[in-house]
Length: 154
Image 1 (cartoon, helix red, strand yellow):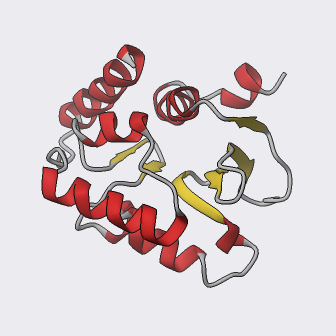
Image 2 (tube, rainbow, N blue to C red; image 1 turned 60 degrees about the vertical axis):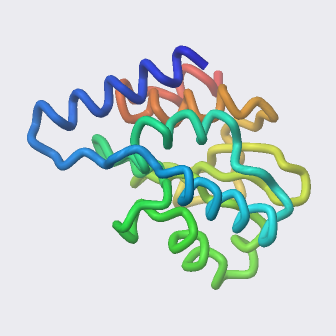
Image 3 (cartoon, helix red, strand yellow; image 1 turned 180 degrees about the vertical axis):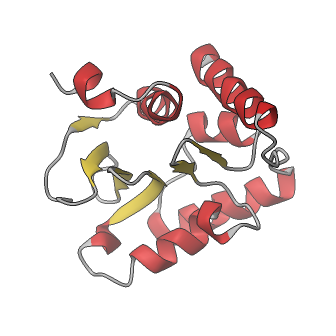
């Protein structure tokens, strides 16, 4: 979990250095609201790694990577984003946690398996894992370093 925290803080620092507004950590009340929503809607708890990230910043946006929280900003709000994605019945089988112009980072509701997929070919799975820490680490690395396909899909 240390790597997740360090990478999250690195993104916040980089955003601060370029003058971006930094999201405050999620409040206990908002985290409870998100947990309730996830359990009621998907029968899935908020992944522990996402909780760790949200306690540092309620959603992250850096270098074209949007990691959702429960932010006031619609493009960083996990509930709002999933409501939009779920208008398509094929996408309604997934929880969307992050996106870039190239990738979508999702969890299949039925199997609870995390994956990242090409945005332009959603049926193609680039990587699957049940390890939420690895999954969120990949998202953070995508923002910080790029090259996640080369690193994780070979």
